[in-house]
Each structure stands twice: as structure tokens, then as C-alpha cells.
Image (tube, rainbow, N blue to C red; front, side, top):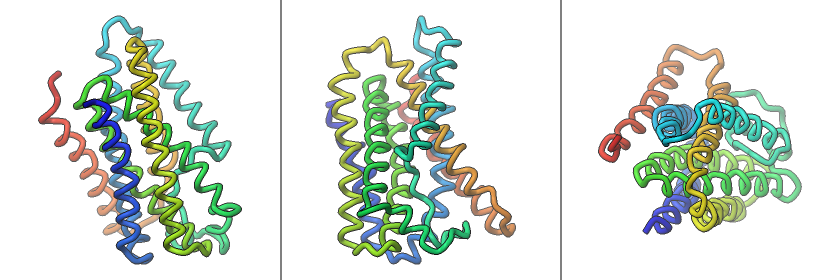
Length: 259
């Protein structure tokens, strides 16, 4: 049953992003991504700091200093992955309000779209491993962790879809690329279930690495996008969606939480 939960959770993020991208116009998607980035930041930080990290530290016999060292190592690992352009967070595109130069989306797409496909696939594979580790630890933790991954997956995939369209891809080809990269999350989840489940003593460390992924994406990618000079109305909108993200995490976890 746990494997079924993992497959469903890892598949859902990619499927939702493709459905949203396929059903909305480019202009609507561009506006939607802005709100989803704020929502995603709230969900990721709430999940990491209120649920996943506490769960890791509550595991008996685990040294807190070692877990904090793991957290630091995880942050550095994802930083290096992103420096190597293997850990994409595809929210940036032309006309997103960040004044990207003309041709930015062509550069982001890379030759034949492989830059987007490879980077997203590695990112999604890591997300699948994270979801598997969370469900193997506790079903309730798996639910809230999946929520955090899905909340980030949707704006990521929609952002990449916009990049590919602006780079000259057809809607069908851009959607196909998104769907293919999304399958990497399912692969990561299944492999995580088969391999990670045998090493239960490492679960606290895997949860800390999962937290480092969420914190890194939120602090290094999402929040800097929100730190722009905006009107009072736009600032309140950001705070509103951040708050909604936090409340969603608290509300979803409430019925499950048994600690």
C-alpha cells in the first residue's frame, strides 16, 4: 500500500502541471505562476520547519549535531547541483517582471530543449526519493511532504512550459517534455521505496536532506523572486499567498498528526 501512495503522489505533481499548462493561455499562466511562487514558498518552509525536521529530530538515538551537519551538507549539495545546472527551478521566463533580456527563453531551453529536460528530470528524481523516504517514515508525513513537492512542482513545470513556448516549441512538444521530466519523480519514488526501505536507521538523515531541499528552493530561489519593489497591493498579495501556503500545511497535517 505504501508503494501505491508513493506512485500516486509522485505522479500527481507532473500530471497536474501538464493539465494546468494545457488548459490555460500563456498570459494566464504567467500571472498564475507569480501567485504559485508565493504559495509554494509558504508550503515548502512550513513543511520543512514544522513537520519534516521535527520528525527527524524526534527519532530516538540520533545526535542533533550530526543532523545539523547533515542539514548543512544538504544545503551545500543542492547549491552545487544548481551551480552545475542540474537542479532547475524553472520559474523565470521573459515577461515575468524580472526584465530578462530578449532571447532569454531560448537560452533557458537549451539546444533542443535538453537543458530543461535533464535539469528538471534530476530535480524530479530527487523529489521522488524525498517522497518515498517520507512515506516510509510515516504516512502522514508522506502526505504533507507530497503536498510540498506538488506545490513547487506545478509552478516549476508551468514556468518551464512557458520557456519552451517562448523558445519556439509547439504546445504539444512542450507538454511532452514536461510529462517526460515528471516521470522521473515516479522513478525516484519507486527506487526510493525499493532501496531506502532497507535502511530504516538512515531515515532521520534522509528527512533532514529532504528539509534542506525544501529550504534551499524556498530561500535561494522563491523568496528572492518576491523581493522586488512592488505596489502595496502586490505586496499584500504575496503575503496572502505565503500565509495560505503555511495554513494549508498546518490544516492538512492537523487531522493526521499523532505526535
